[in-house]
Image 1 (cartoon, rainbow, N blue to C red):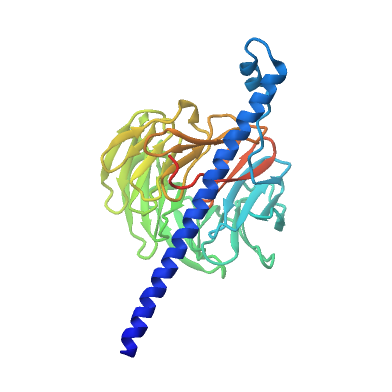
Image 2: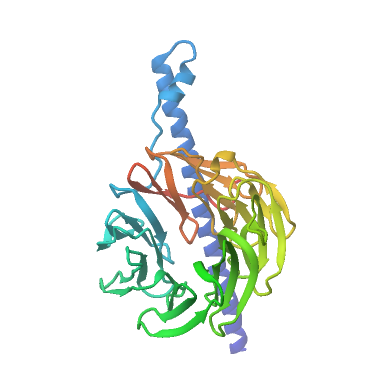
Length: 401
């Protein structure tokens, strides 16, 4: 009897906690929707006020052109320089930026600069380790990467190799030179494994998201192949002729590349999706210009340059974004429902990923957007623009269409 009573009490407590979490989620979504509607009303109010002041024929159209866009961001970081890279911490509480000669870590709510690393003028990208307070800043003129502990300020420099790449879990650092790739212990600096790339010269490589393999662009004569290397065994799978861009799917099963033939003839309007473990072509997608690839978080869809959103399983296009999106910044929401991006303007736009219809727009930047990224929990967006600022925005709720 006593055990049964405890079991029932546990069930009731679980129900109560579940109901409380549901109410909190609904309240958060309602608040984000309220903010989106408030932004729309503010825009209309500004335009209408200027129109009334101008009066006359076509006043509303003139006002819409002249009225400054309202600043709808919830946080502005005064970078005062061109931002070359930015990245959210795994828990979304911090935002790292790379600009000028410094890398900085900011509180993404209060906007305080919490840590700074100077002397990184040549570096043009950075990324967080998924475990521990480490950020890798890459690289200087000598291909040196700095591993930076943002809590203690301690730095470890890995130099002498080309383009060091940190694994997502922060445990390994891969470097390459000519015909070999070396895997290092990121913190201790010990050499873990050297992988030979046979008759090819490694030119570019990228870790899979499960940190078990990496794909490399291998030069052979005037052409290029894609090789996939297993970190544990050192084995290699050769995919075939391809060119950049090269992007792993989040599930680490597939790789998207620009389509080429053995004669190094690349088709600008064609993309190949490969099975990374077998080397077989899964499918070829035609259409548009493949400036970049963006996989959906569940690995079932692929955003291809200005060619739109493709269903990888079915092999057909779902919808097309405005052609101006092209090479400009874009990013999937963590739940795969939305795509955020720019059409070469200072306005941030969010589209429905299945229909490419506009869900919301955000104004406030005074320069063209250079970067956009979602926070890991999907509640915020961060953008960098030519006006020398980084802005943080409240993202549309996941159910917004």
